[in-house]
Length: 228
Length: 295
Image (cartoon, rainbow over all chains, first blue to last red; front, top):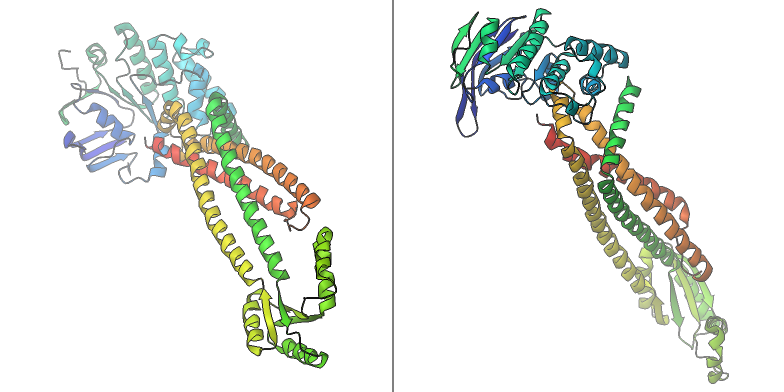
């Protein structure tokens, strides 16, 4: 589903973010991406949704090489992906319902489908009764749940989450991870970068550790492996 | 599908305009002023062209005969002149008629002529019209060479000056129009840039969930077009009103001035202004959004 072939990324100023990385991620996998800050986790994620392009090497998503993809094709790649950020990135002037509906509107989904799907995903993240609220009226964990709902509303095959529990307390983090597990159980590939030792150690999923732009560890039922 | 999309674009564009009312007002005002000056310049150039060509068509050569020629000689000269290439018509005016015309032209001041008593200082002359205004000079030179005339006068110099003036005004006009269009473009693109900047988060999210560039761009382009059309409508109303007043004044008190009638001239100018307004609005917003699309 996702394949990196000898991927190297060097940013302007000669800063090497990724060195000769090769990796395979299959459909339906749940992956924790761990490693110190600045190790290259974000670059790894950004290359999946093609915000960054490798300096050398190739990246395949669903067997399609995305390196030499034309600019006009990028939106269609991203429709296959759900992206969740640490800083949630909700639109403050839109209600919860509209925030999620927005993601469907901009890819031109029919009105009826939008209503049905938004209700469904809000149900899934347990916020159905808050659909008329505004982001500022919600707690951090609830906002992150809205962001996850937005990421999955278009039924992506892959969900990419960059430290989604970074700002949350352990209990809330656990809730968020439960939602990701639920999404994963439905067959969606989940890739989650995290610094959360407890979460990683509790789930026993595949763990990929990146340090200085190199994969130092790739374990099927791995642990966090750092002292935090 | 298309209706739903259009609905979305329009509501986004109008929402954004409402949100940035002051900037929108500034943009519309600048647009209106620029387009008004642009339209006025165009109308002025058209009028000067019109005046030039109407003077051009009135150009004639007055060839004054020597006083000592008899009727037979006058006839011969008239035939020779008519035979010159490029001459459209030849009309003989005897000195008595010339005096009468002169007296009429003087109007209330005709008493000046009383000082002359019974003498008539005016010569007999031919009024010669050319088929083409550009040939006037050549014909005049031939008449001079013939030696039949004491003096030859024509309005060529005035025409040439007028042509130089219209050419100058046209060049200045084009420069002014280009300059004003660029100014309007700059202001519109800045206005849109502010609204784009205010909504960069939204654009970013749109890009992440897979909205196409065209889909993101449309509401902003529409916003630019609305600003452009708004400005052009104000310009158009002011221009029509101003020109209407000028035409009315001219027909009432400056009857000799050949002014271009309001229509169809203004119909074309109006369409032009709206199109230019639309174009500037669309291009201006297109420019300003480009930078924010690179996610």
